[in-house]
Amino acid sequence: MTLQIVNTDQAPSAIGPYSQGVVAGGILYASGQIPLDPQSGEIVSGGIAAQTKQVLQNMKAVVEAAGGNMNQVVKVTIYIVDMQQFSVVNEVYGTFFSAPFPARACVEVSKLPKGVEVEMDAIAHLN
Image (tube, rainbow, N blue to C red; front, side, top):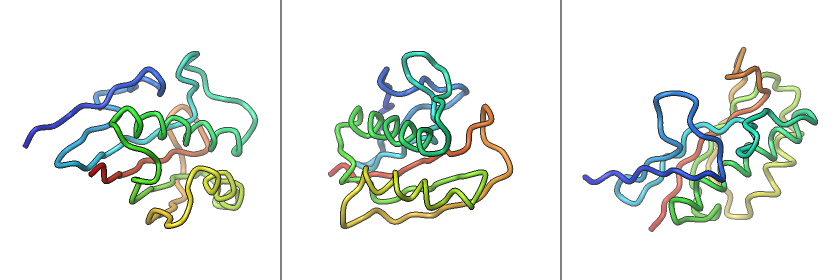
């Protein structure tokens, strides 16, 4: 099987030994995105809503770099440090997807990289 490594300057560079995304057999596996501005490398300010928006913009950039679009995302996992913020995350999330919506899980975690409030990864079917 041939793997296509996805790399775009429209999303933050990997901060460890991983790729922004990998396409295998027409499926994109997008790595977790945190709310880093891809140009400055800084965490966006403005709370969980602004962080969620940046995470999804970064995810969108990776999906598009792989040749897809957000309508092809079939699964998203959301990691948040405070489940009380779920409704805010959900509201922003809804502006990036339309029906039929991807399958999804949301997990509260104790910490995320760089102290951010939210991270998401995704799987997209590109065919």
